[in-house]
Image (cartoon, rainbow over all chains, first blue to last red):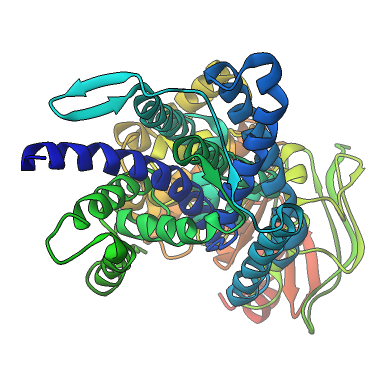
Length: 304
Length: 238
């Protein structure tokens, strides 16, 4: 393939990968923004979402087929189920530790991650589960590059979810309350805001977005397993840091940028596909050293 | 005789091992301004934090509008119309003035009603209107205090708790804040005011309580407290 086509192909790959990262990074960043917790179980919610979506699709495919007619309700149901799982996790694992040192909560998050992974492992026996759909390969050709409709819908769905989230957080009552809790939870209580309920809502939304990403990734790659959330969790964390952790547009930007970096990085002579993770995490380290607030994060300025 | 909006009976509060309130009791009646006075660490802020539910009382009883609120969650107490403007203003820095006001009106579900109340706040504090879409952290100390009060008024409180509204402000601004509080009270808002600036507070208040190490050591009509030179010297250091 000529260089131009390679670049175009990698642009498409990078955007798809990036939109998966971005959806997971959003939840990471929202939860961090609101309660300053790095929820290391977040990647596993993506994995549970993929399995929940797979379960729904298996139930629906007999009657709605395994095309979009079956996939769309599966995505929505998986989002609701995993959203509720996120709320339950917050209620039983994190809420009792709200006043505890941050390290205790962080360790609890690692434990939650293990519980989720091992539960799914116990049920699936650690096999790769084929996530089969019949979406076909129809699409449009740009030169030698073929972009399927499925790929376009995946990226489109991610973008729609991100825009809806941004509007929710910037324009609505509860969105404002979320941002205010990030600044001063006690002052929020004095305004009549139910802080625990707002945090639960944050977990619901973040977890539902991770689930959507998980189902979309299952549809795209055609295979899911209990460990698939681990690496994407780390990468979504990287994306959130690159964009500016706690910042919603930053998480989207970081996710897309990371997807593109990974796609193009593998094309650099001498850096093959097996180096892509090294490439990604090298960026994390560079950002942490030179710009820990990320691209869109503002350094905190206090004025008395 | 007007009705008691707020009543505290034998209230005790601890911060860990520290016995911060050692059994305090007083009343705030409808339409009054009551001042809680005393030195640093006497328990004035703790009293307000206990009333608004930020710190739980270990013993005793807090009643608001006839309802026992001793064990109620802070946000539920705020929803009843008891609004606390905390020490240090605690405005939401990084958010605009308008967003701060909207958060004060969080319990107002109707957006149109919220807008009306915002406009009323802007009419009362024109300096806020000019800067409504600017980051609230850019306001001066006095303006931040105005915003903190305006934000609390968004909820149309039955009782307003004000913690050191004059702290860190130039004398001219202290006067302005005190005038604002008087205006609010004349418009019908009941106020419980914590102040270090005892003279200014007693000029405004109907009733005063002087605190020392977690107890109320002196209480009475503001005029009496003002007249009692020896006591003012001893307890108010003024």
